[in-house]
Amino acid sequence: MSIGTFGFFTQARLGIYAAQNGLGVTGNNINNINTPGYTRQKLNQTSFYAGGSDKYYASGNVQIGNGTLCTGVSQLRDPYLDIRYRNEMSKVGAMDEKLSSLKDIQRILDEVGKGDEEFGVLGAQLDDFFKQLQNLNDNTGSAHYDIQVRSSAESLAKLFNSYSSQLEQVYKESKTKFEQDVDSVNSILNSIRDLNAEIRKAEVHGNAALELRDERNMLIDELSSYMKVDVTYTQEDIGGQKIEKLVIKLGNANPDATVDTDSSTLIDGIYGTELSVPKDINGKDNTNLLVALGALKDAKGNVKAGSTDVQLADGDLYGSLQSMREFLTKEGEFSTPEALAADPNAATKRGIGYYQKTLDLLANKFATTFNETNQGFIRNSKGEYVRKDGTVINGKDGKPVTVENPMTDELKKYLVDNGGQFIGGPLFSSKGDTNDTTDIKASNISISKDWSKGPLIVNSFVQNGSSGIGSTDSSNISHMLVLMNTKMEYMPTKDAKEPMFNGTFNDMWINIGSVLGNDMMVTNTMLNTSYSTSVQNNMDRDSVSSVDLNDEAMNMMQYSKSYSAACRLMTTIDSILDKLINGTGVLT
Image 1 (cartoon, rainbow, N blue to C red):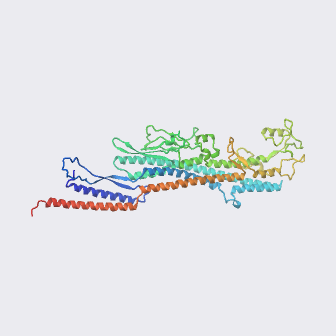
Image 2 (image 1 turned 90 degrees about the horizontal axis):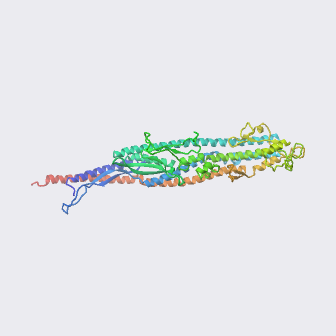
Image 3 (image 1 turned 135 degrees about the vertical axis):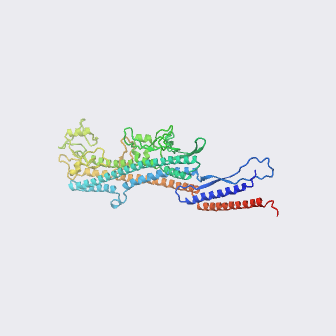
């Protein structure tokens, strides 16, 4: 069917409307060029055709359309690019949070250049302790030099205490941040849920609510840095009308294929969950900080049918939230069997617990070594334990008891009962006002009560006949000096089959810094790689979604010309019809 005579007015009118709307969309894009999260919009047009069959009309009848219709305004956005960007942002969030946490530890333990002669403070103090022992070795029996050694040891103990206290403070601050991040995620989830409800209402009334979608997309981008997410858009039937439904699930981050909680739903249309860290069965803080998801609820608190609480497994999350959690809970080589059962890779993940326990291990090894070296029973030059008169103490088998026998509590009692002479005592304790040597660690290592009262270092345990120990004999102090440069095994747990490190006290301290530096280097490399990829992905998104002034200028010119042409068409049609109506059949 061809267009009617007066139908040309409709063509021109629709053309004017289309050009006006096009200019409006273009102007809106230009106005929002600097608006964060704004997605470029476009006018949707379709050719307007109305009519029935033309088979009864003459074959020469020409079919002409009725103009153009504006069917709506949509966004220029590529969901695939969103997926790529958000997946990469979860990596950026994970590595950035991990690196930031490691830097907090670095500020405490990385002491290069802070000590004398460019050594670290604790490393320099270990060297000072060795130096003071050398001075005592050269001046055996001098109370003054014993005090100098004690003063150096006291400074070393205070450094251990200080580092332990600072690490504990970092732990508390990090835990507070973790709790705040959980609250932030909950706020984001609630906001997305509420925006879904508003967008749903708008769509029911025929409004695409594009600005609300931009706000929602920004929140999803922010959420993706906290955890890996899977975003899908489906159509929901609400009684004859289909509207969009947004569903967000966890991004299947757990490497264990048998675990399905890592795909749990976070957002289901107008329903959303909230994260929490439940208490353990005894009502105490969950030391593993496992996260749970609440049942899906709408803004009024109504629970979605069939929805229940979900307890997430150790590896279900991936992003900044998981990195902070692992920083607070993972202990590397110190991991317990339970931790390894929950996460097979736990032994390779070093959080603040690893550095705290490594520092404790060094402090305990140092204290235990010198405590054991500075106490024992007097013996002769052959290594046989003797009485005060120099006679040898024989065992139950009739043979002399020698230093080769392990010093057990039973042996100690036997020697005491048989006239053995115990001398010395522990140099370090777990409490400054006692001689208690149990559970010495960096946080509590201190000078023992007896040593704080006066000289305690035993210069020798070897008695020369019945004349006692020689005043110039410093064999035990020499032994202590040797121990300062002796490689020792550091076992992370009592049941460990292999040591985590073998070296001197100073080597162990340097190793802590080396492990930290290596972890930071690897994390920084991964962060830079992921960040570069995310920047490229965002640029790809912007190439599609962001406002380009050149494109908008061309659109503005196009719609302006279209508007002028449509107006000219209207004028021309008016002129033709005026001639047709008023000029046809007029006699002259």
